[in-house]
Image 1 (cartoon, helix red, strand yellow):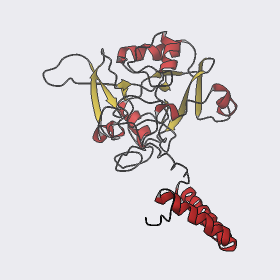
Image 2 (spheres, rainbow, N blue to C red):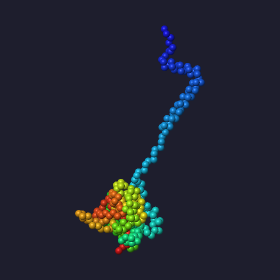
Image 3 (cartoon, rainbow, N blue to C red):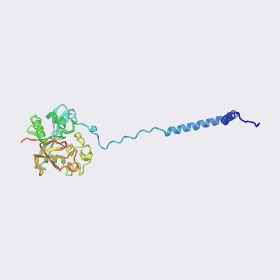
Image 4 (cartoon, helix red, strand yellow):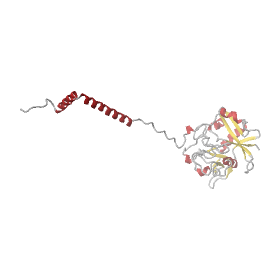
Length: 295
């Protein structure tokens, strides 16, 4: 019978041989163990570096500000300390926290309008309108959004109530600006298509290209050189002028200026003149008040 060199499976024989070698070669075994530990440590380090958590990239800011990011009008407390020191500013205090601010325009006979008049710094807001008229017909609701969906006749009632309430300077009255007064204030000394230059972009006004598809809080965009806001876009603004109706239409028509959130750049030009039925309101039409010398 031939000799059997093992008493088990090949795997057991190999394990026994390895254990026997380590017993007779302790130095080499120790060196091999240390080397194995070093290799394992390096592998763990490399894996941990590969899985390092990175901080997320900064969130990209939206190309257009959300309405909630737009600051609201300053409160009466914030403005009361400075208005009385400026002779060209008139503030109408309607209620606590609700006021109208107008600035004086000196035309210096450069155009065929009164040499001086006051005009609202902002479009009249829903809060201001409701305080006087006790109603808010606006389609887009928000206290510091411009009031819209108001007819020309409703706006004139608002102005008459302000005058009757003693809010005008002595010898003056509230009304709507004439088309010429509106344009002089809008241009603010410029001869370009807009008070900001010959083009209008989304940083200048709320119009169709801005793509809000609704009104925004008054004063959301930069003022012109006279300190007037939203002369371009947001809502069309009623003027006092009567204009003839288009051929084939009827009704009393009044001029509107400035364009709106719905309309394109060309409608927002300083020179553009629109018209609307004075008995009807629309979500694209609001107004700003003027104060002129009474007849």
